[in-house]
Amino acid sequence: MIDEFKTSIYKIDSNFKVVFVSESLSSFLGIPIDDIIGKSCYSLLSQYSSPCKFCPIIRNDLELKYYYEIVSDNGNYGYFIANITKSDEKHLISMLDMTEMRAYHLSNKHKIKEQKADISRLKNELSFNKRKLSFFERSLDKSQAGAMFIDRDYNIVHINLKLRKLIFDGIDINISKCYNIYGYSSPCFFCPWSNTGNDRHSKVIDDKSFIIEFTRMDHYILEVLRDVTKEVLQIQSIKESQDRLIEKQKQMEILNMDLISTNDKLKVIQGAMDDELKRVGYIQSSLLPKSIPVIDGYDFGVIFISTKYASGDYYDFIDASETNLGIVLADVSGHGTPAAVIMAMTRAIMRSYTLGVTSSSSVLSMINEVLCDNIYTKDFVTMFYLVLDIEKSSINYSSAGHHPVLYYDASEFMVKKLNVNGLLLGIFKEQEYEEKVLTLNSGDILFLYTDGLIEVINKDNEQYGYDRLLSKIIMYSSLSPKLMIDEIMQDVKEFTNLESYRDDITIVAIKKD
Amino acid sequence: MEMNIKESSKGFVIYPNGDIDIKSSPMLKSKVLELADRGSVVLSLKHVNYINSSGLREIVDLFKILKESDKELRLCEMSIDMKELFSFTGLSKVFKIYDTEKDALGS
Image (cartoon, rainbow over all chains, first blue to last red; front, side, top):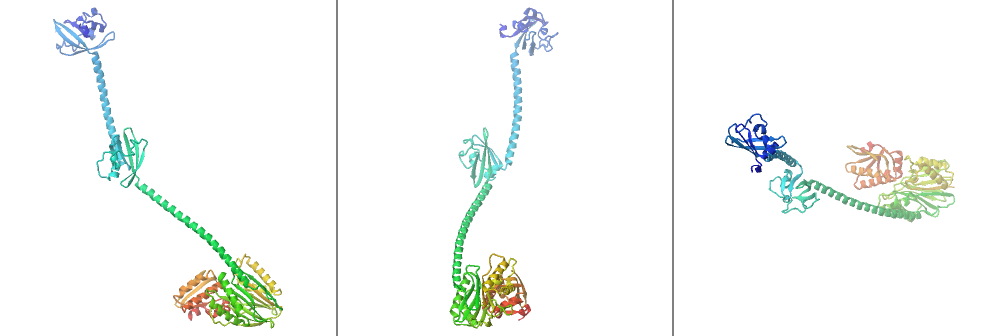
């Protein structure tokens, strides 16, 4: 019965000798009961040679708890607590097997130790995490971007200073839900909790432009708000200037198109003007003598070179009377159509006023009166007019500001200038013109020219000039007037070595046979 | 065309330099007209090589414009060729022409 309780019992006498031992103890110790009886308890259970130091029996206090920790020879381990009762000078000791309990206790003790360690570690971790959090929060507060942590329930776990400043302008308003920040009373349509993959959104809050970047964690979202108002304004401004530039470019293109079309029109007009001038030139040419006079005893030579289609030079042979031939060489100042018109006018006046008038000075005075009434530009006309008396072989001549006619005197082999003064035609009315007379002898030459001849320039800007012309006239004086003119023009061509002349050139030469 | 201008108590003297032709005459003309509003003007031609018909045209036009407001343009220091030009064109009787600048300013 006792054994069934797994309680080991033994009984000792007053000399600590075992008088009884339970089966369970005997089997625990691995020693037969007979061998146990008679042995002292301290040698049996504690391998002592004398009673145990703390034996309650010796100490005479049976209430004392006494613990055995026994490792038997056969390897059994047990932990017992002794309960001692005394009867008849004998003590009955029942050993309550505490092995499992102790093991449990020890294991608990270890566990508690571990838990304590865990708690301590967790405390450290917590403290570390708290410091870490504080560091992150402080770092977040220092951030130039607004930032907040949001949990699954849209609560703002943390909001940094910058965001407070951005949204509330530094005023401390208690907002607990993230969507309140964005001005909503329920979760935003762009909420990253419901729109996975949405990691960025732009939003205007109170005239400020923000870019919100979402970083999703398991239970939180970090929302970083950057105020991009300035950047947006800059982009807008760049866009606007770009638009303006594009607009300007368009305008320039239109202007350019306009210029191109104007240029085209101008080309057409230029063409028309060229045609016009050509026509004027044709008309003018038709106004010049078709042929040179054929008169016995006289030889004539003429050249007329016009730089433009219309010229200001005019020469003519007019029958003043049956025996008098008027020879005129004139030069209208200026060029082009106005000069051509004045030239045509001059011709018409000459042709209507000279008939029957054999005095060259009278002719010039009349012409001047009419031209003064009819020239409305600042132009004037220079004119040399001579009347050749065919029978008397004499001339009378007058000049209205024209270059002196050159006279080759064959008897003296020299050229003289027929200096005769008179005001340019068409400037002031009521002018008197000087008139001189000259008799022509055989071989004498009269050389009439316009200033275009002596003003021909070469590449060095030198003028052909009088002196060269005079020498050439003497050099070719034996030739016919026509050939003389050809030679002189050849010389002019060689002198200038340029493709065209600056001014019209007209030469009329008369030689007395 | 270069042009020097001297101002004295008796008036302005303009010294054109180079040829008086279709290119240079408009500038000379506007200068003469501008100065003529402030006093008498003398045109010294001592540095002028040549006057062609275009230049002559402008000088004659200048004379006409000045005459309308009873002003005159005096000329001086002409070369022999230029004197001949003014002589055969009859302009020597139209313009007041002096041998020296002093004479031109003095009268």
